[in-house]
Image (cartoon, rainbow, N blue to C red; front, side, top):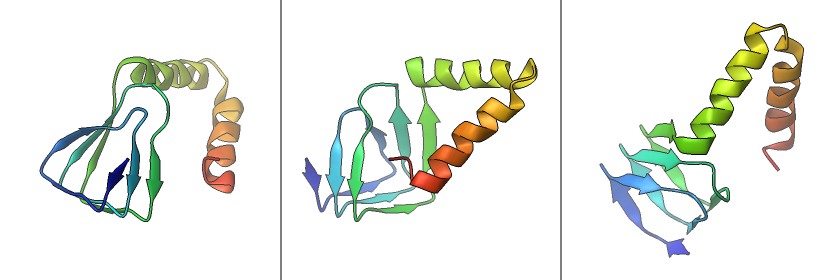
Length: 87
């Protein structure tokens, strides 16, 4: 677990990591589809959130679902994420 760390202009691979009381400034946060990261009391300032590998493939799949008439299914997923806070 990373605790009370400041990341400034860094690329941080998030898969399977836990962060507590960390600050991310102008950093690239990369998620590749592994175990989701855990953030407790962290601050994010002007960060770029990147999806790569399996995570990017999942986003591509959702775009296909949307484009072939599955708009409601994708919207339901977004609602589930935003209403439950992703948990």
